[in-house]
Length: 345
Ligand code: ADP
Ligand code: ILO
Image 1 (cartoon, rainbow, N blue to C red):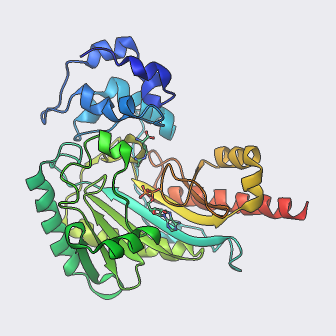
Image 2 (cartoon, helix red, strand yellow):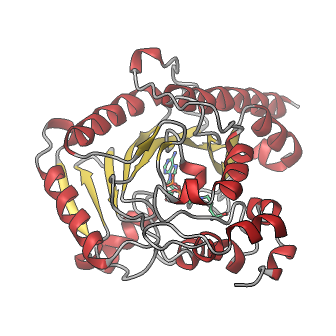
């Protein structure tokens, strides 16, 4: 394997940290599941506009390719290798009264965590058989849920086109054909083994075999962040009782993308900010100061529509779940304050 020259035209963290020396050191290494450097970097080499550009194949990827991945992780999460990951899912510790009780800005709130099953390769190299086994195992557990979390599993395979499109456009279901995931090998055998579970109100959802084995999601209209967090914690606990998830004392929950390590949590609101949308520099400065990320409303790499943005915690590692939500909460408070100020001018 030769040094990937195209990376010289990329601003990704992969391009920044895959120096010739690091490349030489790692180029012949592989994990027990045969995940190679080529596999780690192929999405970033194919998609030169990647922000990160690297994916893992298994837990071991993070140790075998640590010379490269530690740098990416350190910069993305502002996390030092020696730091320990600490989980805190105690809902009493979260201070997040609705930042927009009148409902003028926040459209909806969503919090998700990613989880992968211990000992099974990640989606980048999982076999069709293993993927199907996960689908069977997880959907069976989901069937036993009671009360608010009770619902139904829909396999992507059997879903009608209109049904699928409605779930996607209402922000409940992942899209197919993401080119970053495609290049990483995550879309192999699509749509086999993938699907979505949701309760009646679509406030608790669980994706199977998208980028990670599981994505556990709580969402609802409006800005009651705490209610969304409480429901999510309940769902995580239920799943944890039945499944052993891959967890590392420094890296936290093991995920396919290094940006999701740690808590694997992304807490977001869809929020209408027309004035900040016209003042991008101020918008970006506040986002940076409060460690929040701005996305469009149809998922990552999408554009804003009708001045609605997706605002979420950027860091997921080195801070607890409560702190992730707290980061998003503080960022949202600051953004609403600035939006109101700009409205008056
Ligand atoms: P991830 O699943 O990693 O959190 P994406 O950016 O791909 O990230 O989002 C997945 C889906 O969730 C998209 O359809 C997106 O619009 C939707 N979504 C994210 N945040 C919210 C929110 N606060 N309210 C409603 N939908 C949301
Ligand atoms: N590989 C893409 C996405 C990185 C973060 N997002 C997700 C979905 N993991 C990139 O490098 O821009």
